[in-house]
Length: 333
Image 1 (cartoon, rainbow, N blue to C red):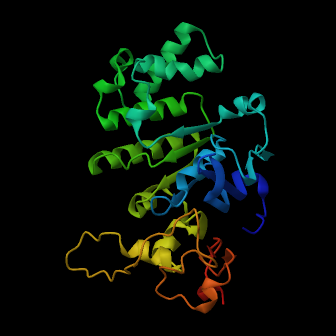
Image 2 (cartoon, helix red, strand yellow):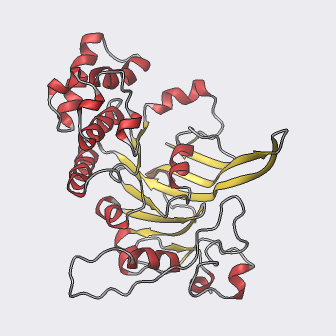
């Protein structure tokens, strides 16, 4: 991405972020290759804003989120948080920063300890960071429950006693317990009913307004992402192929992959005939990604150059005052 004019306005930045997982095989378990889960992702998230990260399953979205929090070690690139490069920090220096970087997971049942009461779950981050007395922590846990629309009585109950939507509210309460600046939302509504999804999204928006939170919202559903995001980054096989503001990406998508994703969104009007872009073939393996543009094996408008030369993520003319970046030879030629 081009350098921002006012770097200090960006809470989070990734520069050429790479996460490669080794693959071992044979009798002696020797390294036989590597999975290019994330292979050069650069993006920025402004303070108090939401960037949606979308793409098909297996494209590396979740890996990006976990790498930012240093839950996965980086194979290359940098993560800049609050103007500080945290890529190579030791755990002792990372821990204080983690107060300001939290995560809401996709599956609230798996991410909540079934052996702990809700009160214990919410108090745990406060205990780890040495915040408050036991009575103050219990009071804060009750306040957190009320803040996410749960009754105080939930504090003595266990996660299995709640519905999926209620468990996700508890997960959100845990994420905001330390009053962070950044929250990575890893498909937080994909496992919920549609009616519950809107409630959780509205809760996230309300909390963002109240606490000036910054979100990286990871999802595969473009309709959901549009509802909550200021900007959207579209990812394919470990790379970002298009980035711009939410309105532009729906009204004027430029990359063929983005167009295909947009055309697949259901239109709630039977009289409207939406022309769909059908993608043929399977997503290539990230163990052995295609040469050139990684999308060329499924692209309906690919030409000879696409299979030989990897396109750069370049700026094109977009909405006034907004960046529109696209990695496509056809668009940038």
